[in-house]
Amino acid sequence: MRFSLIDQITELQKGESIKTVKNLSLAEEYLQDHFPGFPIMPGVLMVEAMVQTCAWLMRASEDFQYSTVLLKEAKAVKFNSFVSPGKTLSLTATVQKKEGRFWTFKASGNVGDVGAVSARLILEQFNVVDTHPQLASADETQLKSLKELYSILNAT
Image (cartoon, rainbow, N blue to C red; front, side):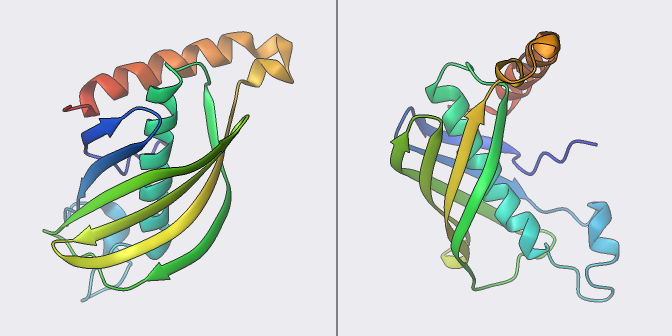
C-alpha cells in the first residue's frame, strides 16, 4: 500500500524549495485508532509528509533520474501542535545542502499560522539497478508511476 501524504504541490523552485499541502480528512483510516474520541495525525506521518515533500523537490530538480528516495536522518524533530480532521497541513522544505546522492533540508509544517512540526532531514536518492542490475525494470516501473502521480499533484 502506498501512503501519499501530499495532496498538492503548490509551489516549486527546482533545486531550492517546495510547498505542499495535506488536507486531513476524517476518512483517513489511521484516525480511527489515533486516538478514539480525539483523532489527530500521528507525528510519524507528519514527518513522512515532510519527507515526501522533500522527495518531490528532489525528483523534480533531478528530472526524475532516480527511482528511489529514502530518509537517512531526521534531526531536531519538533512537534508543536496537533493536526486534526478538517485542517490543512501546509508543508515547506528548503534545500540546505546537496552532496552527491544526499540532500539536506530544513522542513516544516503549519496549520494556518501555527507551527505543527519541523525538522532537519537528510534524504538519499538512487536507482535499484546500481546495486541489482537484474532489477532494471523495477526502476522503470517506479519512475513511470512517480511521473504519473507528480502530474496529478503538481499545481504549479
